Amino acid sequence: MTDQKAEQEERSQYNYETFEEIMEELKAQDYDKVGLQGPDGIKDELIEFGSDLKEHGIEPVMIGASSFGACGIANEKAERMGADALVHVGHTRFLHPEGAEMNDVNVYYLPYREDRDLMGVLEEDYNKIEEQTVGLVGVTQYMDRADQAREFLESKGYNVVDGKKGLRTTEPGQVLGCDAGAAHNISHKVDAFVFLGSGEFHPSQVSEAGKKVYVVDPYERHIWIEPPNSLDDEMQAEYARVIKHKDKKRWGVVTSSKKGQNYMRAAEIAKEKLERHGKEVFLFVEDRIFESDYKGYNIDIYVNCACPRMTKDWQDLSFVSTRALDVLDEVEIEHE
Ligand code: SF4
Image 1 (cartoon, rainbow, N blue to C red):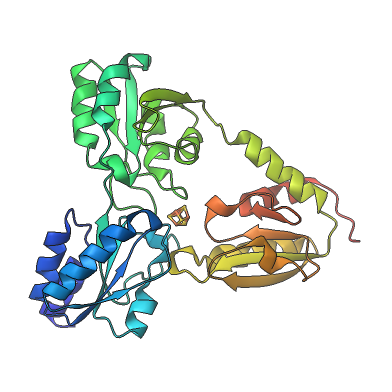
Image 2: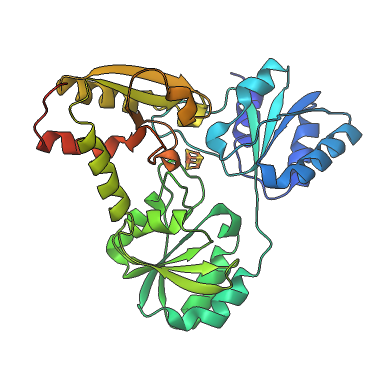
C-alpha cells in the first residue's frame, strides 16, 4: 500500500464533528460518488448532506435502510453501487469485538450530537449525587459535553474518573447498548456513575458494573437513579426460558449478516456448548431479526449471537443470550 493510500485510509476512519470537515476530505480525495447512511430520526439532514455533495460535484448514493448503530455499516451496499466512500451519520466508528475489519470502503463517521440542555439539568440537579467519587460515562449524543460535565462536577467538589474506551467504542466514556466496558473498566475506582443520556437501556447496562447510576436526562429534565445490577431480573427471566426448554432437542443459534453484528465466534461457542449437552443445533443468519422468520422450523428456542439489544422473549418463541446457556450446566436434561 502506498503511503498516500495508507494516510487516506487512516483519515477516513476518524469520527468527525462536522459535515463540512468531511466534505473537505471528500473533495481532497476527488471522489465521484459517495454513500450516505444514517438513522431514521435524521433523514431530513441526510438529504441535505446529499444536496451539498451534489453542489460539490459528488454523486450521493442514499442508503435506504435505517441504521441503528455503526455495527450496521453499509459499506457493502455502497461498494455495490460503485461509491468510493461512505459517510456514516449518527454514530461513532464501531470496533468489531471479534476483530473483523469494518472498513472495506473508506468510511467517514459523523456522530450525532443531541442539542438538548444537558448541562442545565446537571447544574440544577447535581446535589442528588451523594457519592464523592463518580465515573463519567454516557451515550455518543452527549459525549461532546463530557469535559464540561467533568469540570462542573469537580468545581462542586466531586472526584471524577473519566470512563475508558470499551471493546467496541472509539470515544472514552462512551456506552453502547452492547458495550458498557467504559463503565466496567473503572468501576473498581468509583462509588457511583454519572451517566449523560436518557432512556433506560443504556443506564441499566452501566448498572451491571454493580454501582448506582445517576442519569442526567435532558429529555426528562432531571437526574434520576438506576439502581445497581438492575438487569438481574431480566437475566433471571432468561434463565427461566432456558430451563423451560432444556429438554428440547433442536435449538437455533442466530447471528446477523450486518457486519458489526456478525458474531461467528460467539455462535460457534454457543453451538459447541449446546452440542455438549446433546442438542441438535442449527445456525441461522439474516440482516434484521424478527420472530416471524423463525416460525415453522419446529424450533422453540433460539440463542442470540447478534445485537444483544434484541434478546427478549418473543410472543411464541424464546430468544435468549449466550450467557443464559450457563444454566444448562446446573440442570438435568432429558431429551424429548
Ligand atoms: S447495541 Fe446493537 S445496534 Fe447498538 S451498536 Fe450494539 S450491536 Fe449495534
